[in-house]
Amino acid sequence: MHLVRKAAYLFLTCLIIQSLLVSCVSKQKPEILLRAALWANEDHSWYQAFLYFDSILHARTDGRLRVEVYPSEQLAKEMEAIRLIQAGIIDMTVSASLLSNWIEIATFCELPFLLQDSIEKHQLINGPIGQRIKREMLEKTGLRPVATFERGPRHLTSNRPIRHPDDLQGLIIRVPSVPSFVTAWSALGAKPTPMAFSEVFTSLQQGTIEAQENPFALILSAGLAEVQDYVNLTEHVMSWSYPLIGENQFQAIPSDLQEIFLEAAKDMEDYEHILFQGNELSARKELIDRGMEFIYADKEAFIKKCQQPIYFSLSPEMQQVYGDFIKSVRK
Image (cartoon, rainbow, N blue to C red; front, side, top):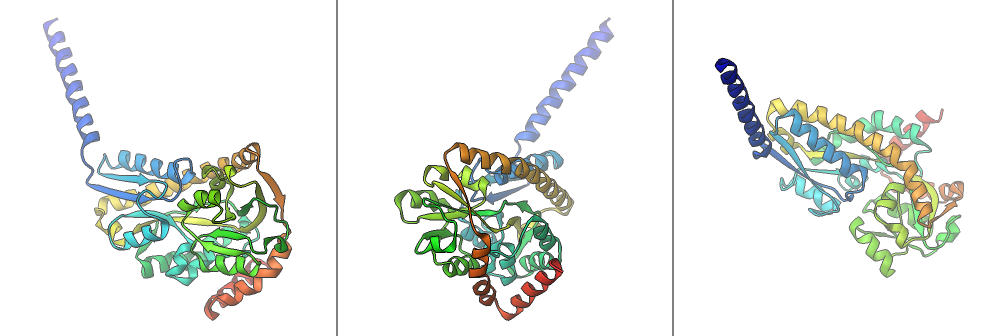
């Protein structure tokens, strides 16, 4: 009986020590702490996907590698975040077409009226253009794309219905700082105004801008139903984005953790895709429930009016890339 009690005591002691050790490990400072700056807020699938990314990295590396996620441009606006990564001040962000300010091929991430549906989108992502985008990001900007995040088609929101390009005359539209967006909306008769996304709600509220364009999920999560009456179904861009890490920051991760990092990024991508599919339908319904009216736009009229200005705004090399892609997907 004494031996049984002694064994039980030792077993209980071991459990307590083990529990204390686990507690210490979970609270210890990680060997590598990455900071990720997002412009999306806490309700967006990107933020939720990054939290998932951190949780699986924590589990798979025993706490050695963590990611701190800062939503709603708390650390930096998107353009600034890219520069801060290049300067080694922060480590990660999500971006795509904004990188066309560094590499022209990134224009194809969100070139207005290029893609007709999600099938063509995935052909571009997985084909020669998509491979070149990722290669040039790494070689020319020092940013390593580690996954692909879904984005729904971009639509125009406004306080007057927009069915035809003629309805756009003089409308002040917020756009991201992407040259092809400025070209497209100018050709359609609007007044495009590049602006950080964090400024959009207040600018709409104050009347500094009159319209903006984004996918359903972002329109919803940003609360734009409070300041916009219509969702005009222009579907002018089939978009996606890349979670990015600075290449110098990635190379600073111990080699035994780099593979874990990349595998976890792939799992984050799969998780985000699942969230996106669920959110796309529910976001549309909720926008209707919040009083927004959906307007069917004459897409052919939009395409006819701005396709040539977009094409001729490209360099000769990018015009060739554009033409080759159209031929390959629409034989």
